[in-house]
Amino acid sequence: MSALACAGAVYWWVHQPLRMHGDDIELAIESGTTPREIARGWVDAGVDASPVMLYQWFRWSGQARQIRAGSYVLEPGATPQSLLRMMVMGDERLAVVKLIDGWTFKRFRAEMARAEGLQPTTAKLSDAQLMAQLGNPALSPEGQFFPDTYSYAKGSADLAVLKRAHRAMQKHLSDAWTLRGATNSCPLNSPQEMLILASIVEKETGLQSDRPMIAGVFCNRLRVRMPLQTDPTVIYGMGDEFDGNLKRSHLQTDTPYNTYMRNGLPPSPIAMPGKAALLAAVHPAETNALYFVSRGDGSSVFSSTLAEHNRAVNQYQRKRP
Image (cartoon, rainbow, N blue to C red; front, side, top):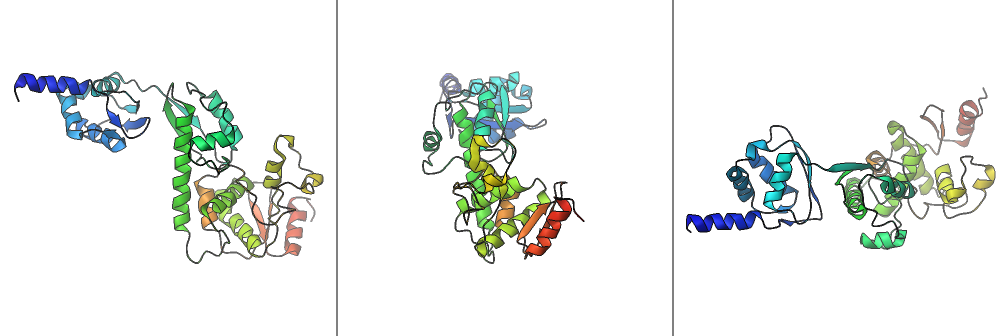
């Protein structure tokens, strides 16, 4: 091939949209990363191109050493030329939205609606319609999104962030279920049941060290067919009617989530559990405890008998000697 033809082929290639595996591709470039490593990083992240060609383009442009460290998002339609320009100019254009452990899906949707530069393409979709868009129309959205910090390019659709959070939860759920040992006697029949239990564990304590014990208590109750009797499920079942004050009458009002009146797990998760709660659900502590009560400092006291539990309640909740 003549030099002129070769130059023409290069010119054509650098102006052609790059093929991508995914809607948006992210890459964090650390200080000191070589141009060759950057080219390989983009290909590993999902750019369907030869890493050698990308690297040679960076070198041939004369701007390889001008690439700036940062976190970048490559959008559909980007060309090798616009990719290099973005990195040389340091045009990160990223914002973030946070999904916090223990949040409900309703709260997460409200947070996404406030997120800077995130297009509300799902705002008018019902929960069922949204899950259909994500390929799981039979699932309730509650608990199906992994709590984490998600970065995105300003102007991105909120559906793209939801897809990433949903895929992340599916992966964490699958990984946790795979870790479930053959000796695990907790009567859980599916990853979704494990997710429900993890969501309850998440809401019952903020103390990570207590989570396996709390999971162990609930597994023991499920095993002996004892009601779970957990307040967070009752509160979730009340929805917007809950005003922050849980009353005895609420515990006696039947809903699908009232675990005082119904045995077994509720019909869906009640929140977004984090990784620690998922691992506690799949590796509950081996314990004889059937009860626990909060000390008031974030930790819990565990008891094997009702008499022990009542003494703990008197000491820590009713403040009796």
